[in-house]
Image 1: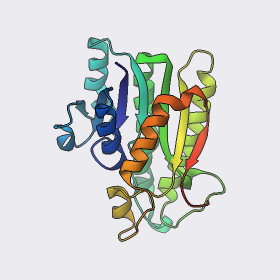
Image 2 (image 1 turned 90 degrees about the vertical axis):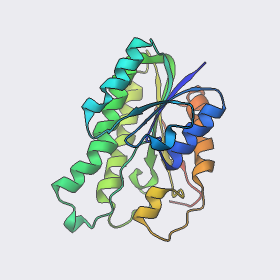
Image 3 (image 1 turned 120 degrees about the vertical axis):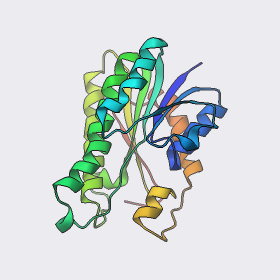
Length: 223
């Protein structure tokens, strides 16, 4: 049985991805601050706040104790705060980067010793983090943090090129999720969380057969 770790698993894309992975027979380890929505899925759940690195300790101890080999790590957790740049003080940038960059890096670093050499680390980033794509006011912290994830993905693919695992990123366009609704009330995205969850699961399990160190745009609109 293959093992997949999904962060940000309690809602939106992460929840659908977790649900689909469990239905397909994978051993799913779901990480989220809010674990209540995950209790009835029949997956292994850990309460993790990526802005607090010590919260990863029970998860890491479980991997050690159970001698888990992780095949796929999906860095899906993200924090979006829409704030005009003139109001985006140190605390705003820090709150976004602690989850989207520092937390993602720490989860990846602590999971790497347990990831198969033929495994896949897939980070979910945003079209807003791609150079030359359309940008939107109020997302300076969020989009720049996603740009950092893109560069980190490319660097790690090079650093682990000879030993594995593979590292890739998917840069998503608008997807109809709770996070999108909170940031842009009333906006209707062309892609549902279920649709994107299906695509991400397939790419997490198979994408590294063809790609390493790549960032693939996944959006119906032209940047």
